[in-house]
Amino acid sequence: MEVSLNPEVQKFIDEQIKAGQYRSAQDVVEEALQRMIYEETEPLDGKTLAAIDESEDQIEKGQYRSWKEVSEELHKEFLGH
Image 1 (cartoon, one colour):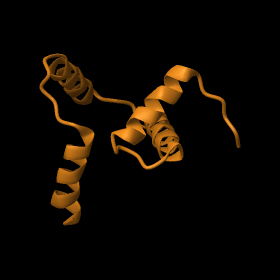
Image 2 (cartoon, rainbow, N blue to C red; image 1 turned 90 degrees about the vertical axis):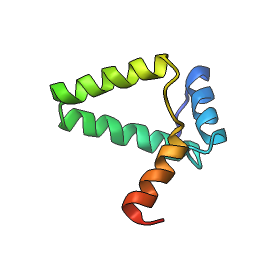
Image 3 (spheres, helix red, strand yellow; image 1 turned 135 degrees about the vertical axis):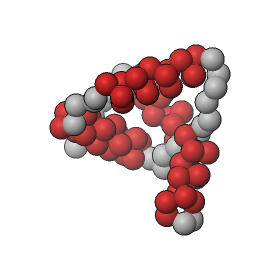
């Protein structure tokens, strides 16, 4: 399947790959679709929505870590590598 993307979306995908978040455009698209599928099947509760709001506030204040750093930490904690 071939898909045409607008330049803004293509730029975002390229940035994610350059940042080391994903290995390929296919990985980025698959992750996005998996998230969309999950969101359709699992509505967010009030606690989750509040956590999202809090995280957005922290991002605006510059209080965040890169996904790569967090991902590595989670892999070590839960997968032992």
